[in-house]
Image (cartoon, rainbow, N blue to C red; front, side):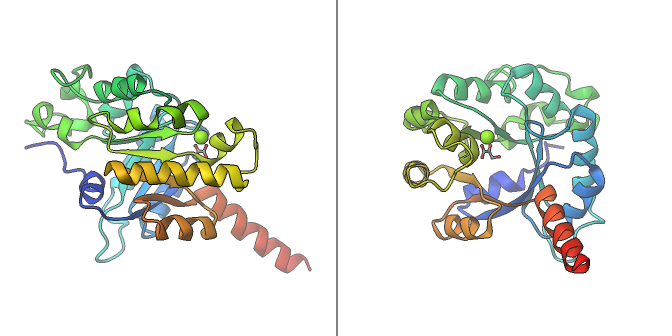
Length: 263
Ligand code: 3PY
Ligand code: MG
């Protein structure tokens, strides 16, 4: 049996637009709720959320449960954002069964190429071989896992700095990079507008980057939990839009309810 088909990679290759939820509560119960809400994918964030390998594993397991899918709904795809794009860290997430990644702070084609290699077995890359004891191969039930795993990896690299923007054409030319994801918060900070991702200069930089990604034929992605932003980016054709986060939804709903009954 081969590695599981990566539905997210397939959808993006088919030119579909997808929406997703950022999981920052670090909690498998919350992941299970998000899994049935109707998103195409959920990102388990290890960069800015209190996650580790075991909490990520629990959330991958929660997302892979089919009982929590709404009727007629395609199962949600799991994506991991590692804290940093290091080979040994990616290796651990790969072995617990993650096939899709959004890697933060990528600033050169060399760095992007290194990430491609980190997520592929030889001869295409340098992923270490331990799948026979790993959830990724369903504990060796996927007998063809080693020879089919590379084709099912979906890799987004994050461009979120001036250096990343300057290197964008070269990054887009790297084989094995499926898409480029813009991080408006870090990008605005590096452009001199900390906390103001709607500054005109930031919006212009983001639009220019999205145009370049679209021209390359690769998938584009962006973090846009403000619905006005999300609608704008979806109308522009962005293919991987983070339209929600578990914490954002929870704080908004709880604060609204508290304020309504406190009056
Ligand atoms: C950013 O906005 O900097 C991001 O990384 C989005 O998660
Ligand atoms: Mg960022």
